[in-house]
Image (cartoon, rainbow, N blue to C red):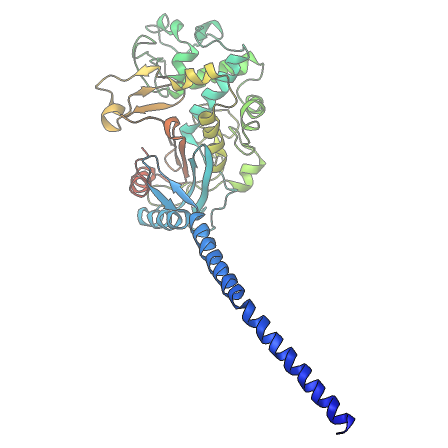
Amino acid sequence: MSIFYKFNRSQANTFALHSYSLKSIEMDFRPAKILVKCFFLVFLILCSWEVQGQIKKVEGPSGKRISFSELDEKIEELRKEIGMPGISIAIINNNEKVYHEVFGVVNTKTQEAVNRRHIFEAASLSKPIFAFFVMKLVEQGKIELDKPLMKYLPHPGFDSASQEEAKLITARMVLAHQTGMPNHSNGEPMNLAFTPGTDFSYSGEAYQYLAAIVGMQHGLGWKKGLNELFRSTVSLPLKMPHSTFVWDEYLQEHKVYGHDSEGKPTANKPQPGRWSGETFNAFSSLHSEAGEYSNFVLAMLKQEGLKPSSFEEMLKEQTHFKEDNSLKQEIGQTGWGLGFAQKVTEEYTVHMHTGNNHDFQAYVMFIPERNYGLVVFTNCDKMIPFLTGLSEILGPQF
């Protein structure tokens, strides 16, 4: 037998041994492979569950929940159905802004899409944040809630029959709409509807009187200087950098167009016969959008930026509506705090305000008991049908 033969046979035996060993090892590892596959399958299932659990949802005040994507679709469907050109909307859950989106167009003629930088008219949503501004100045000792305003600045606009009772008007009465002053005097002598402090009468005129006093107390007047005080005191601390009561360069570039009842564009800049852009109109000239304004709502919910006693004054009922009050009969509102209307239900209290400049409308509401809030800005006059549709999607909003 040759050496070559012996060597090959030895190699063959060695290879056979190795082959047997590998098969043994492979058999030994089969349970491990099965176990790894099982673990991998379980991992995939858990990941799937986790992804499903992390699908972002918005919860309404009554507990109704909907995914972001479905809410997007339903809002867009609703917007088209009611003929609303553009909208900016923000929703707060658990004292956090969980949803902020925009839909539609800046101008129905150009069809330019709305984006989150675009600014709308807040209309009367100006009043609640002005009330917050005043409460800040009350804390600083610049204004007293219950000091007659005539002691700060006599008002020459009352008729002879109302001059004596007008001396009773205070900042508290202004913010709670208890002055008896008309909504707007239009340059005519004002006759008080009732003795100040005894009833409710919505008045933008009264808010502007108080704004003039705030400006005078600071030596600023009621134009850009007062706006700068508002910005340094309120809008900048609340992270509302583009919210303003007077015209500026940002508005020049980013304000959307208003639209009339037929959906035709009106204007997006100051014009003769409209707001001049120069005056601080405490009752209506705030410009903002839902994302920024919701920061103010968060401050109200989380009670940040004022002392607890100031929030208590703002949120408690200052004016209780009589049974024949039109707002109570039509909407169910029960009274007014300092800046916000109130609607008391069996489960919670809604603090709310509407804004209506006709070609721009806005709405805000929040519920402290639910840590919930909603802000809507639109560039048309279709807020009511929108809120009605949104209530069907998310539960009652009004």
